[in-house]
Amino acid sequence: MAGTSFITVPAFSDTRNRIRHFFGTRQHAIGLDLELGVPRQGVAGAGAASWTLTVKQVHGTEALVVDRALTSTDRFVGGWDALVTDQPGVMVAVRTADCVPVLMYDPVHRVVAAVHAGWRGAVAGIVPKTMALLESSFGSRPDQVRISIGPSAGACCYEVDEPVLEGLRKGWSGWEKVVHNRKSRSAHLDLKALIHDQVRTHGAAPQRVTTVNLCTICHDDLFFSYRREGKVNGTMVSAIGVPLNRR
Image 1 (cartoon, rainbow, N blue to C red):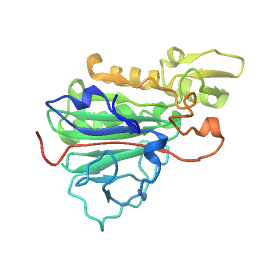
Image 2: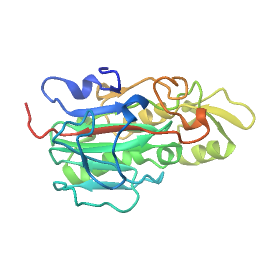
Image 3: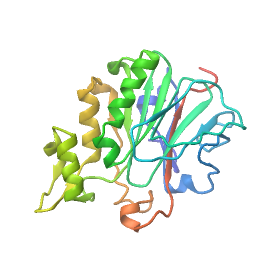
């Protein structure tokens, strides 16, 4: 991890690949000039020459594929919870405040993805569906894709009620492995573990999956948390992109 306002991971930062990426903190979010569906340049951590794009998120499983260069006049009207691109100089970004940001990179085909996964999207399989999209659209083999699961509500704090547990039971056969401290009508849910299990089941290589083990609810100095604060006081931004100049 590097930097005081955002987090990077070695899986994307090694000398050979140098993929631009970050998991943002609440400090990083201050002053960010990002409008939904409107590309912006000069975002901290992205590089001055890069375009950063974030869109309206709807807790679904649809992905927006950005397969051309962006301009300041582009507008993306609609709702998506995953963004995918192979365009150098384009950073795809998601916003979270307890949900899980997931970043992906295929070093063979030079394609990246950013995914927003709350419990609904995770149970519906947005992360493995995005991996399948990388394969169908760009030829990315699941075992080649590097995946990093970012800061989110942790199993230590993320207590969910019966409707969530019922959705989990119906949507994921291995649900019992990611549920802890069960009571009569509630339990603690480990969203990171759920996503980790899903990508492994989809064919991701274990050594290419990493997790930032920080809980957004616990660390009020680092992260916004909808669950802790009871409202949306702000969101963290996480992004990834292929740089314009490969070094």
